[in-house]
Each structure stands twice: as C-alpha cells, then as structure tokens.
Length: 236
Image (tube, rainbow, N blue to C red; front, top):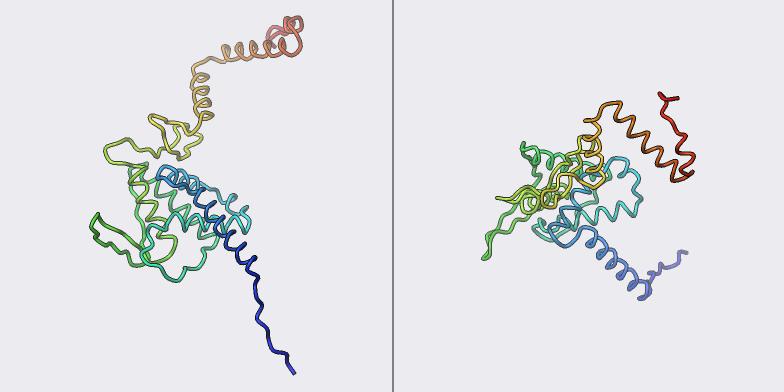
C-alpha cells in the first residue's frame, strides 16, 4: 500500500527571502553594467576583452551573474515578452565577447562591422520616433545593442571617436577616451614615454644614468660614505 504524496509547503519567510535575494542580485547586476551610456560602454569593453582564462575561471554563480548582466544589457532590443530563451553556454558567452571585440576593432580600424541577424528584426514607428525590437537568441540581441551603443556613445557623429586603441604598441587595449587621451592608463603612458626617452640615448649615456641612479640608491639605504666607493665596472 502506497502512502499518498503530500505537497511540500514552502514557508512564507523562505519565499520572501528568495524574492528579496533575487531583487538584490538584480540590483547588483544593474550596478555592474551601469545606468548611463558611458557606463554601459565601459562594461561592454571590459566584457569584450575578457580572456579565455578569465572565462574558464568563473564559478557557477559568476557565470549566472554574467548571463544576467548580458540579459540586462540587451533588454532594450527584446520585442515581446514571452518564454525565456535557454541559458547560453560558457563557450557561447566567449563567442559573444569575441564577436563584440572583433566588431569594435573593425570600427576603430575603419573596416566596418557586419552582424549576422538570426531571427526576425522588428521596427515600429511611434509618435516620438522608431522602436526596434528583436525576437530571438541572446547573442544577436547583445550584438545589436552593442552596435547601437557604439553608434551613440563610442563613435558619435561629428565628434572624435571615444573608443580608441591604446597608443602603446605592446598594449593595444580598447578603452573609453577622455578628451585627447591616447593611452589606456597612466602606466602605459609612463612606459611609452620611458621607451621613447631611452631610444634617444646612447649605450654610454644609458650606462652612466643607471650608475648614478644606483649610487643614489646606495646612499639612501647605506649612507654617503659607502656610496662614494661605488665605481662603474669599467673604472674598476
């Protein structure tokens, strides 16, 4: 004789806690991608330039958070509410980042960006303008949102592009420029200025400057008397 199955009742306190937890995570994800176009653009560049190692090191919760960020970023292109599409795999998210990165490099290099739209793309004319919507996979919605954002904020008409590649040859990182900024960070600016300065010095001058720097360091840590006995190798 089998016993009748009883439906497990979830206490209201647990339901409220789960609802509060979801709301908290939604707030955190919105804070990560930002609320303005400039903040969205910085988030997009950071996502596009993630390395494969960074993707593979993500925990399960971090992957879920990244998926939520992608859905929040692309929510403006969703045409109709309906069944939620399946979650993208890790490799699918890596592919999205690679597609966005390739497209931005194409725009920076003036070669353009072609997007393969997989599904219907709807444009509706409203009283205040046009409204675009897309019913389909998350990848295409992310790419379309990225293209619209880059048009508005990254490459605005009649203005200098805000999305640039770092002028340091060894870096080439994409970044959001402020005014006439050409390096992605102060570190890259310092390294490039140091490289240019050293390239104009002879080997003898470079050796002399290094020796003077070493003497100052010895004097600071061991005293002036010891520093006076420091000699260059050629003088020994």
